[in-house]
Length: 306
Image 1 (cartoon, rainbow, N blue to C red):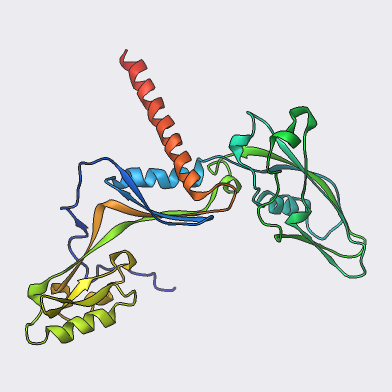
Image 2 (cartoon, rainbow, N blue to C red):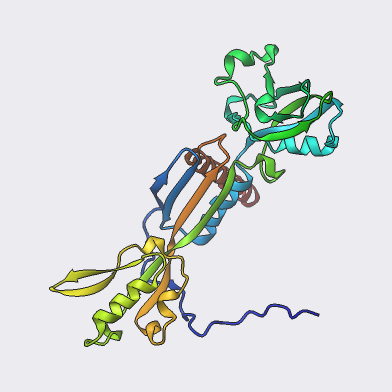
């Protein structure tokens, strides 16, 4: 029987992980660090960890999107089983904003493909065609027209003569019901690192060499040497890059010269979207969801107290 992994407290692990002097009584604030079409990095400050985790969980599981829910297969002579094909189609992300649809409104896509070549042919997500519902005036009301976000997702491979003909019904849902409805690839956060250089721990005669050793040992280039008051001093130049790998305190005696902490009310969020909703909008909508939850709790408390 193999030995099970054992977890031990590292000898160089600090007794204190979070700083206590950074707690602020100010309102929750957000600072955008990086924003792209599919990625957002921002700081959430003056906030407790449970609230930060609530935002993360809501962005993953409770912000609604549109996905393929029902697949009506008329013909499938490919080697892919019907249930596997339906599952693959359900995971194809759609470029549809759920707020543009009416309550209980559905979308329909069709796939009608026959391999007519001598060799095999590939079916891609771009072959899924939207069929507008004229009764709901979808062709004029929905702009841009609903489509797949990525047109190069491989759905199936067909041999000569094989056919796939089916219809897909798309509905609004949330990631708590199924992962295909989650609007994000990932939504994560980490506590902001706080690194302190304890000057009194360095030897005056050899501190320059020790500063250089501190700078060179960090793989993330967190530290740098600057000329302060006419003499070189080690400084924390890029605390955001710190991954708490602990390389800077592994050498003997360094745990008395550098202290690694995390700010207890400052979190660095990273949100990556599948493309249907921008990451900034996902965070804004998570705020609305949390606000509705708070309203529900207040109403319940008032009804029971009254």
